[in-house]
Image 1: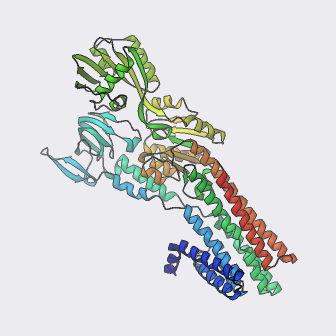
Image 2: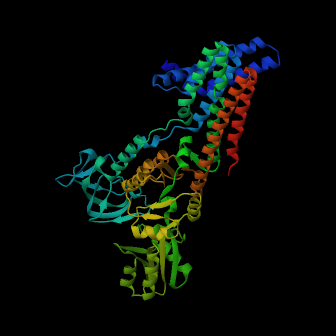
Image 3: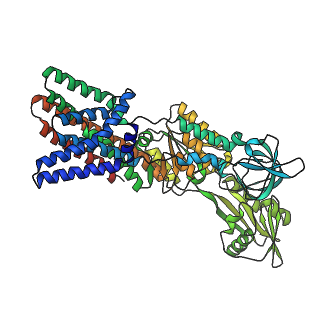
Length: 613
C-alpha cells in the first residue's frame, strides 16, 4: 500500500491531468454524440482513478485515529458508486485532487541550505608544532591553547586571540557587519570569519562545535527541530465536521431504512467548496505576493504573519544598504574636486577597510609612493608633495593641529560616521570624509506603515556598538535598539519577547541571522541575503524592499479572511442543501447543481485576492 501511495503522490499532477481529460471526453460524448453509456464508463474510470489516493490517505489517517475529510470523501465516493452516480464520484475526486495539487504547488520544498550550513564551517587548521613548523589538522582535534596560523584569504578555523600579526577580517558570518575589521595582537577572532589580508598566529580558545560559528549551526538546527508543522486548517475542522456528517447519515439510514438517502447525505455533505476554497485563497494570496516581490512559504506562514505584533530587524543589509558609503565630504581648504581625485587615487593603493569606499569616488590613477602607518592611515608622495590620508592623529602629527578640523570630526563621529582626513603638508588642501552604512531610502516610510497597520513594537538588533546603533536609529521610528548583539543574543532576545506573549517576526539577510530567523514566529529574509537566511525564512522579500513587509502583513490578513469567508460559504451551502433535502426541495441532481455553484462562488471569491495591491 505504501508503494502505491508513493506512486500517486509522485505523479499527482499527471493523474489530475488524466482525470481532467476523462471528464472532458465524458461530457463531449454525452452532449455531442449522445453516448450516455460511454459517458458513464468514462466517469466511472475517472472516479476510480481519483478515489484510490484518497482512500489510501483515509486509511493512513484512521491508523493514527484521525477521521479526516479524506475519510468522508472516500465514503461519499464509494456511496456514489453504489447508487450509480458515477459523475458525482468523478467530480468529487477531481475537485479534491485539484485542491491537493494547488496546495502542493504553493508549498515548495525549502530549507535545503540549512543542511549545508555545517559544511561551511572550517574543517582543518594549520597548527604550530613544538619545533615551530605547521601541520594541517582536523579542527575537532584542536585543543584550547593550541596555536594556529591563518594566512591571507584563509578562513579562521578556531575562536581565539591573536598573539602575533595583524590583518583585516570579514566578520559578516558572525556579526553581519559588511565592514572589514582591522585586528592585531590581543584582539579576539572567530571561526568562520575570513582573513582578507595579513597573516595571523592565533591562540585557540574554542574549536569545532564550541566556536561561535558552531553554536550558530546548533541554534539553527535546534530552532528548526522545535518548529512543528501546524495541522492544516481544514483537517482541524474536519476533526469535528466529518464524524458529524457520518453520524447524521447513519442515523437517517437507520431511521428511514433508505440507503440511497443516507448516501445522498454523505454526497451532499461532502464539502467540495470547502475542499477547493482554502487552496484557491492560498494560491491567489501567495500569487499576489509573488507578483509584488513577496514569496510566502505556504498558507500557514500567512496565518502566523497576521498575528505578528512585534518586528525585530537586523541592521546591516536590512535597514541599511549593507556596505559603507561616503556620507559627507567637508572641505576646509582647497578645491573639492581636486581633493576627491587625489584622495581616491591614493586610497587605491591602500588596504585599509575604508579605503575602497573613497577609492570608488574617482577613477583617477597616479604613480605615487605610498607608506602605510599602522593604525593611522597612509602617507603618499606624489610630484614631490606629501599627502596624508587617515585618521585625525596622522594628519595632526605630520602637519599641525586644527580646531575647526577637530570640531567637524567630532560632529561626524557623533552621527555614527567613520572619519578619514585628507591633507597636504601645509593644509592648503584639507578635507574630512565621513563614511557610514546608509539607511535604505524606504526604511522610515516602511516602519511608519507597519505602525499604522497595528504593529506595536519595532526593534533593531545590531552587531554594532550600542552608541553607533543608536545614532543610526535616531532617524527611524524604532521602539528599542540593541547593539553588540551576537547571533545567539538575537535569538535569546526573540525567545524572551515570545515568553512575554508577543508574536515576533525577524527580518535579516546573513548567516549570522540564522538563529534569530529560526527562532522567530515568522522569519523574513531579504532577497539578496545568504542561502541560509533565505532557506530558514518563512517569507522572502525578493525585491529587497522594506515596504513589502507592510504589504506582506496586510496581504496575510486579507488572505486568511478570504479563507474564512470560503469556509463559511461552503458550510452555508451544505446547510442549505440539508434543509432542502429534508423538506423535499433538493434531490441529487438539484443538489449537485447547488454544489457546483458553491464551488464557483468560492473560486471567484478567492480570485479577488489577485486584484489586491
